[in-house]
Length: 196
Image 1 (cartoon, rainbow, N blue to C red):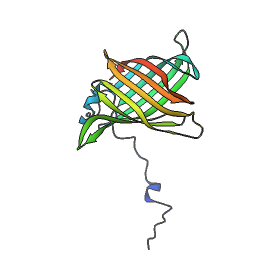
Image 2 (spheres, rainbow, N blue to C red):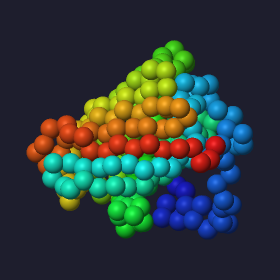
Image 3 (tube, rainbow, N blue to C red):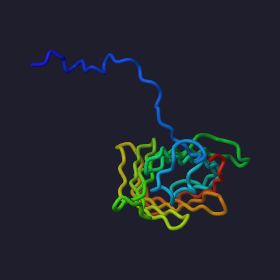
Image 4 (cartoon, one colour):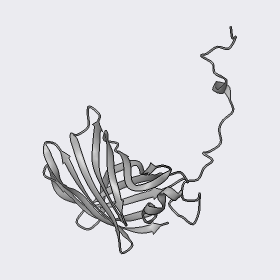
């Protein structure tokens, strides 16, 4: 019989840990080498900023600004982070708006990446979406395969997103099914690369 108390594991009194030792980068000139499975998504890696227009049958149309950071850490997936803020008629910030974090990853078959993609996206408002999609050239199209919501989240039941790199800019359009409405236009924006 061991004398160790299972309620006091050896790591409980271990010394502090240094900061996370691995780099993540949205700039391909620094940081880890890009995993070969991500070669087809290379144009998306970067820090993007721009403006968009939003709306839905249950809300008034609105203007917004957005920053999207798409980075990698050398493994075969991309980290996706988006934050937006509402703008008034003079393009001044009104208040923070939507935030989202997640991962894009190519589907691997026999150790090689395909043009098929999986994405997990989560919001602080209690909605998590699993998207399945496909890359065609510099275009990425996703559709929800599953939506999970907390008990207090708005009723979101589906989504469709189309991303593209056009003349060096990141453009996207997003449709959403929610609050009893079928897929309807929700967001669209054009963002320019400001880093990476």
